[in-house]
Amino acid sequence: QQQVKQSPQSLIVQKGGISIINCAYENTAFDYFPWYQQFPGKGPALLIAIRPDVSEKKEGRFTISFNKSAKQFSLHIMDSQPGDSATYFCAASKSGYSTLTFGKGTMLLVSP
Amino acid sequence: ETGVTQSPTHLIKTRGQQVTLRCSSQSGHNTVSWYQQALGQGPQFIFQYYREEENGRGNFPPRFSGLQFPNYSSELNVNALELDDSALYLCASSPGMGGRVYGYTFGSGTRLTVV
Image (cartoon, chains in turn yellow, brown):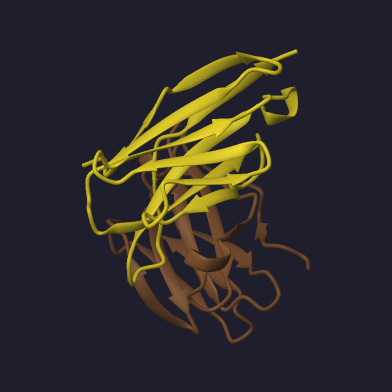
C-alpha cells in the first residue's frame, strides 16, 4: 500500500523554467509534509516542509502548495537551475510519530 | 557539526550471510532512524532508536535488528541475507524526537549488494 504517491517519475525543465512535482496522500492522520532533495551518492537533505494549517510556504525559489481537502501537495521550483538537478522526495508523517513515509521520488534534470 | 557518518560505504555479501552497518549520528542528536532505499524507490522506514530504546518499527522482518549505544551511535544488523536486501541503507538522526521540527540529517548511506 503506497501511502504517498508522487508524480512525475522524471522531469526535464529548461534553465529558468518552473519545475512542479506533485504528491498525494491517503492517510488523513498525516500532518507534516517535508520535501527532501537527494544528489547522487548522497543521503536526502531537508529542503522545505509544511503543516496543513497553511496552504503555501515559500523559501527562496522553493514553494510548497498544500490542498488539504484534495489531500495533495506540490513543490514548485522557480527559476530552475542546473544545480537543482537531483531526485526529489515528498514525505509525510503522523502526529505523535517522527517517522517519515516517502514517495517514490522524482528525478529532475534542468538543462542549461 | 560533523553530520551523520555511515560505514562502510559499499559492501558485497553472499545470500545467507549476516551484515552489520554502522552509523555515527550528528553531534547533539539522540534519535537515530534507519531506512532502506531500493534502487529507484523512496526510503522505507526500518526502525528508530531514542536513548538506546527501539521507538518504532516499520514493516521489516525480525532478521533486521538494531542497537543504539550510549554515545548515540547505532548499528543495523541483518541476518540471513536475501537478494532483495540489496539496497542503500540510510541512517538519519535528529535532536530528541524533533525530526518533525528540525528535520532529519541523513548520512550518505551504505550500498549493500547481496549476491
